Every structure is written in C-alpha cells, then in structure tokens.
Length: 288
Image (tube, rainbow, N blue to C red; front, side, top):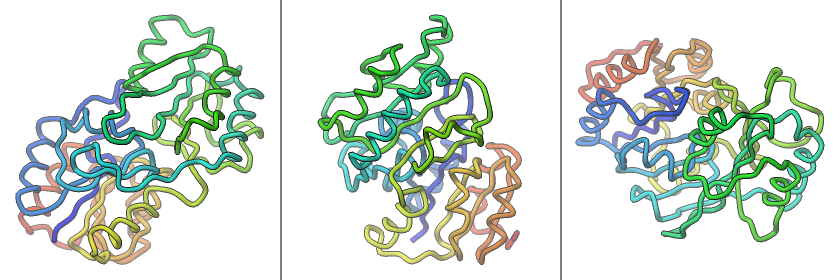
C-alpha cells in the first residue's frame, strides 16, 4: 500500500485559502491510481472537501486531528471533543481578552448530512469589507456575532459538541498569547491563526491512530506526509521511517532529518507536486 496524507502540499495560507491548483490536482489523481490519498489539515470537513473538490480516496483528518471522516467527506469515523472544562476555560478567556481578538470561530461536530456551519466572532471595529474576508476564511458560516461574551456563551454551551476553536489577534505576536489562555493546548500556523484543541490531540496522534487502527499499516517508506507549518505540521515530521515533504519552510526539513526516513524539501507548492510525481513513479532516491 502506498499512502500519502498531506496537510499542505498546495499551501493553505493564501488570503482566502483557495482550492488546490490544477497542477496539484493532476499529481494527486495520478498518485491515486496506485495509492491512497487523504488530507490532514486544520480545516473543517466542509472547507477541505470543497478546496479538494472532493478529491480523496482515503480518510479526511480535519481540525488538527479532532475529526476523521471517510472518503465521502460525510461519514464520521472518529471525533475528539473538547471537554466541558476546556470549553469553559476558552469561554472565560474570550470574556477576558475579547478586545484583543480580531476573529474567532468554531465548527460544531458534523455528522451525516446534518446541516450546520461555523459560528464566528468578528471584532466590532472591523469594517464590513474586512469582515467579509475574515468570514471567507472560516467557510460555511451559520451565525456571526461582534459580541465577545455572546461568542463565549455559544462555545461554552453544553449542547454544543466541538473539538477546535481558532482565532487571530488584532495585533501582537502569536507566540506571546494573553495569560488568560494558559493551561489550554494551543498551536498556531504560519498564517497567524491560533488553534485550541483537546489535550493530547494533534495531527500526529490522530494520524498514527488511524494508520494502525484503520489502515492496519505500520509507518514505513510507503507512507508519505507533507506540510508547510512547523507549529502544526512539526509533530508529523517527527514520525520515524515515513517519507516527508517539507514545503517552503526549511525548519520542517530539519525536524524530519532528526528521525529515520527520507525527507525532501520543496521551495514551492508546485515543487511539492513534482516530488509527489516522483514518489508515484518511484524514481526519487534518498534525499535525507
């Protein structure tokens, strides 16, 4: 079995997170004639399925490992919700520092064809034109508010099952978050989005669980991953024995080289597609 799970082979930090390019689509379609492809991303199932145009024949791992879906992008395989105490802590943090948050959002548990979407907060000082761009980032928006306490009530509600909350700051360094968020499991991507997820859940933990429990396959050179954001994709690059494609960020190349298994570097998403074609045809040699 050849298997590739790609967080960001196409690059996901364009302003509006556009669908995959035709070059990447062609490379993936070619790969899927001999192997299994599935995304591993921070996106919600609705967003990643749309951006991939439904192109997957393996599991969708979404929301930083929180949710796993079959290739139909509808059938839920596994879900890791935030605990009630974690939800309460996030709500309290938003009540404390809402004035610092540009936008925030969460996508409640999606199962079957249940028709719900994202809940989104937009800071009251953001103009309408900028707000439209922020809403486009969240995708499949069901309700919005410019009131931080109201957003906090939404996510802390016991009737809401969710596993990831994402937000961005009006200004400041994502590496120096307000102390109100201390004690929560957090990560951030290269685009400045900050994520809160359940303790012990990330792209790597869910991927390894699915590799063992669903695919019944051990990590080896027939398994490949790709990524472009060290804070969220770094854990995947720490998995030994698999092939890794570092896209644009050499830090991921360094992480991958610390463990066994081939690691490749692509300066651009188009370069990553070329590497994928090389893996498909088996002509790439060890580049670690």
